Amino acid sequence: ELKGLSLNDFLLKKMGTTWDRLIEDNATLDDIDDIAVEQFKFDAAKAGRLPDLTDLSTECVLEKLRLVTRNGITRAALVMFGKDPGAFYPNLFVKIGRFGDNDADLRFQEVCEGNLILMLRDVVEQLEKKFLTKPIRFEGMQRVEELEYPVDALREMLLNALVHRNYLGSMTQMRVYDDRLTLWNAGTLPDELSIEKLFLSHESIPRNPLLAEVCYKAGYIDSWGRGVEKIVRSCNDAGLPEPRFAERSGGMLVELRRVTPAENSDIFGTIAERLRNDCGTGPADVFAIICCHPEYTAEQIAAEMGKSPRSVENYLAKLKQAGFIVRKGPKLGGRWEVNL
Image (cartoon, rainbow, N blue to C red; front, side, top):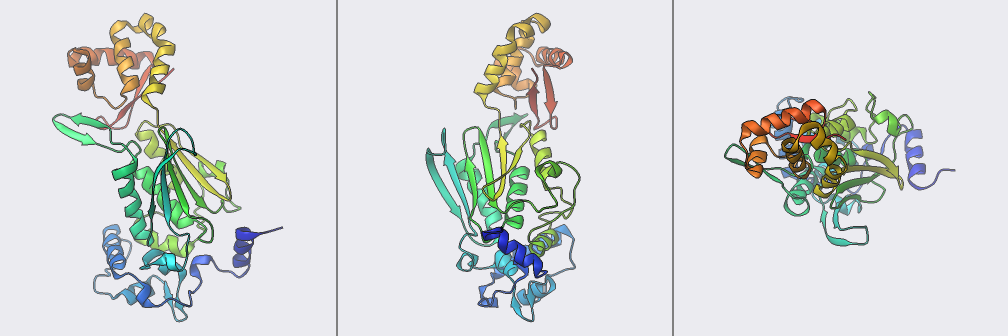
């Protein structure tokens, strides 16, 4: 027996259409944000997936994208470019919450509203300013600050949520904890896919194909079903654990985790004696520093220990040869990953 959102999806499929292709009878061109359309033109020009749109009016751009038909303005047009799409679809916004030890410990929250182009930028900006820390490292004399989670993974997660979500369901929800970040959006996987198949080569089966096509032409996504692969690869390059994907409460949940200094200290405690016996005191001291600061370079470790960089390089070589550590990511900007 089908109920609620599942019944709605079934009926749309029987009609041979999708939610984003339906016409919104009460919408006019006055509901479209020209600034969002101009941003799309700029992004599409960089992506090179469309002819030059510079001299086209907003209406012409929407017609070329099939977002406007002779019958009116599609729902995809309002989601992508609407001045106030929330007036048509109340749960379109993204809610971000910062939590402590558990879900009952809500410290603060923000709501990001507007069209897809605006929300994509607003959510990343809110994460950078209020919700995530920026560990500091140095490349020579240059101070570098990067988010604790890779921006590429966050952006891909958000795009997947906004493009593939069920817009009749609840709002998209992002929860930030001390050791993890989760993103949930309404809408389960299509029947042709499963969690296991997401990690394998698979076809792209978008819930909102018109919206997905517009995002593809803007260069925001590709059309080959590689979203999960991109998220996993970004986490691997940043030295983070593999992300987790799950179906929950009628939607999709993605979870990113980071290894905290306390967890890494526990790892060191379990193998400290074996490491000193196998490699010596110097390498063991280097390993202890890496456990707390996996982003440190050899020069930073040397400064921490009061040793020469050459000595630290020798210690690192011993640790790598013994299989205790592996370097992930590029030489500049990578991280150390410890092995038990």
